[in-house]
Image 1 (cartoon, protein in one colour):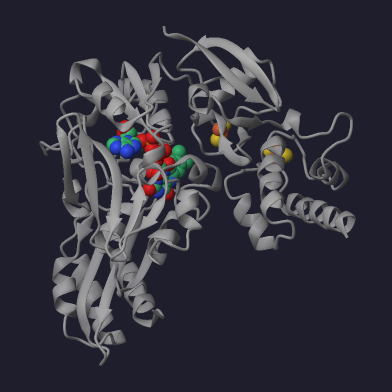
Image 2: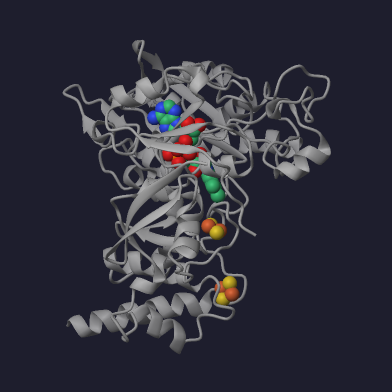
Length: 327
Length: 160
Ligand SMILES: Cc1cc2nc3c(=O)[nH]c(=O)nc-3n(C[C@H](O)[C@H](O)[C@H](O)COP(=O)(O)OP(=O)(O)OC[C@H]3O[C@@H](n4cnc5c(N)ncnc54)[C@H](O)[C@@H]3O)c2cc1C
Ligand code: FES
Ligand code: FES
């Protein structure tokens, strides 16, 4: 049986200005589409009901990777994950994280802009409509109860973008353009820990590009998933550490994805590392500190205690790999 | 329902299709153009049965709207053979029995075609990686990987 996309219009914008105009009025229920690898399955599961899809694909200016005079890497939002995974110009951690997203076919369509804006996921919302109707709609689905935490008044769906932890750890910023103007925000501040309103940008704002400043940090990306060939992360960890000539940690960034409604910065562990040599003992202690404050919810396919434990395992792996990375 | 006129280039031929703008490329290929070589599996991007090449790169036609690929070169399994002469991969797959029910085969062959076009002498790891998004519920993959090696070896042999 074909799972059809419900009727929806399709307009391909030729310029950024045109796209911004087409999504400027919320009453038009116009939604942006880049690769469509997140949005099309969502439409098929009746998780969104736009009137029109506004395609960004033909906006030439939003494609490609450039290096600025001061060494920053600027990536157009429509650059595909295959292009990023094979690019010698992007930070290695970003290329290796992009190579772990979904499958080869999906990476040929999927864009970095779509990845950074990818919807949050949960066992209850990512079910067919008939199942959700029988079970009763959850908060994210227009109902009044979060089935993961019924006593809670918020939605706990999980941030599932693999590239957000990476760009946050690399202190990136994103440029947002709407018909009202333009603003640049840190990648970190793009996210809000709320499964429904998981982005701080408004629906009329288009993510145009991502800027990653030049860095000397040693980095590592780690991802836990069931099948290494295609699955979403049960957990991902991006870490970036700067060490001085004596091997002591100057700055550390540890960002965990797939565990809460927004990427989580392990700030206590980051502070703990400053000034220390990255010995196995220090790494073990930092990874324990990183997992301590996290409260995993029971809304994906492995248990909460296992995922919390895996945070420390993967933070330790990431720090160990970063400490020995050649730069 | 929004009707639209799409101009799609499939296997080198330009088709003008009057269809609804929410149709996926898979539906347009199978229902509007009656090209049933592209298979319909999970319909949610998870199995690779619906793989086609868009500008020579494998993509999933079940989660791509036909409207998204207007103006691009689409290749389906029907477009791979040269008239009556099968592609080297098709020959190798049939010789080595790299298909049982055959449902995954068009997708497997198209993903492999794209691999060999960019990497004519792949290692087994390269093949595993290129086929990571194509599921086969029958063969156990061993014959499939051997068939890709065989096609690569024969193509290289002819080039020498
Ligand atoms: C089987 C499967 C496995 C997957 N595995 C992973 C995985 O392992 N890791 C992972 O991170 N993702 C995964 N995904 C999700 C998705 O494929 C990727 O996140 C992809 O990068 C999304 O990009 P896209 O261009 O296809 O987004 P789209 O589907 O086009 O858009 C996604 C969302 O972002 C919005 N959007 C897109 N571009 C912009 C922009 N420039 N400005 C503002 N808003 C925008 C859209 O309106 C939509 O809400 C998987 C998907 C599938 C089907
Ligand atoms: S039918 Fe398209 S991936 Fe399964
Ligand atoms: S031969 Fe049956 S799915 Fe592969």
